[in-house]
Structure formats: structure tokens, C-alpha cells
Amino acid sequence: MKPRLKTSPAARELIKRFEPFRPQAEQGDDGRWVVGYGHRAAARSGVRVNEDEAALLLIYDVMRAEEVVDDSITGPLSRGQRDALTSFVHDVGVDSFRRSDVARFLFEGRARAAGEALAAYGDGTSSRREAESRLFLDALLPAQSGKARKSEPVELVIKIEHPTEERVLEGAIAGAEAPPPEPDADLPPPPPPFDA
Image (cartoon, rainbow, N blue to C red; front, side, top):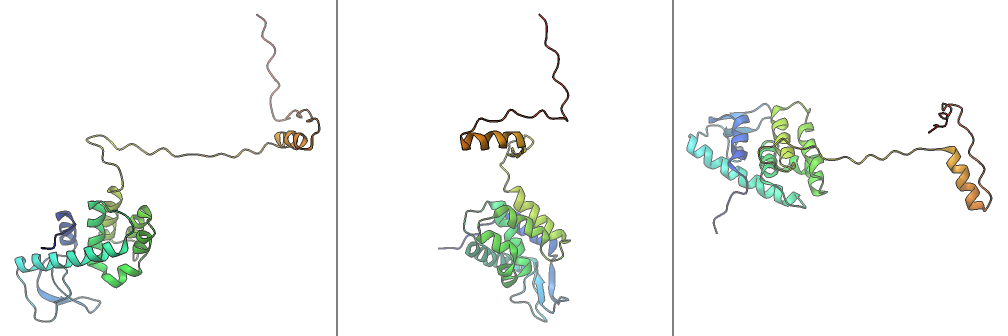
């Protein structure tokens, strides 16, 4: 059976946006060689590729990154989430991905935390990480056809401590008559009765 890409073309376009085409292998600041659209496996001094060859190498890299993502998740991924993660793995490498908070949160099933960890990865100032994070988190939101997204309701719980109520409850539990509530000095006096 012929292997198939699980990501959309958006994943490859995202990678190309941050990995300009290199017809000849170049050595980066980290000492690793890179050629084409960020391909490293076959890159070394003297290697040259044309754009068609670079596109095939990119597909190879994307398929490898997809396998790594699949091995690291416990739940389903949307296409946008998979695209973002594939770009991330392509850039940082398999080992760095597996040691990252992104992979840990994915394994724990915490998708939102994984998306936020994408933006924070490294020094937290990478425009590529920000683009990946935005793509990942946008895929978590429900699609709304032509409408603005609604904010999700938030449950707010407020705990109010009232000493008078506590005394009433204590008395009831002990079987005693509840003492009458003491007037609160901070409250204004009640309004006068209304004459009909």
C-alpha cells in the first residue's frame, strides 16, 4: 500500500514559509547541514537539489514527522493540529520533540496546554513557534460558518462566608434553639413600611 500524507498542504506551506529553498547544502550555526526546504537527513557538504527534488525530500520529512506525532498522542488530532505539530517536529527534530513539554502534554491528552507550549518553546519569541501555536489552537475551536466565534461560558463559583449563618447551623446541629441573627452595623436601616 502506498503511504499517504495525513497532513494538509498547509503543513508544507508553513514549513516552506520558514525554511527557504536552499539549492546547495549549507551548514547552520548549530553545525548541522541543511538543503532544500529544511531537509537534514541527506544534507552534507556538496549536496545540491532542484526544487522538485526538494519538494520530494520535504514530503519524506513530513511523513517521518507524522509518524513521530502519531507515536506521541493519546487522542485524535484535527488536521490543523497535525499540521502544526508536523512543522514543529520538522524544525526541532525527533529527540527534541520527544523531550518537549509539547509532547508531554499531548501524551497526557492536554491539547490546549500543548498548543500553548508550542508558542513558549525555546525562548518564546520565535515567529515560527507562534504560527504553529496559532494553527494548533485555532483547530481546537469549533468551526462557525461565517459567524464570529462565540466565547465559551465560564462557570464562576463564589464562596461567601457569613458568621451568622454558621452560628445558626451550629445551634441546629447541637439541637439548641438558633440564636437570633445579630444586626449588622454596616447595613443601612430597613426602609419604613409602605402604607397602601
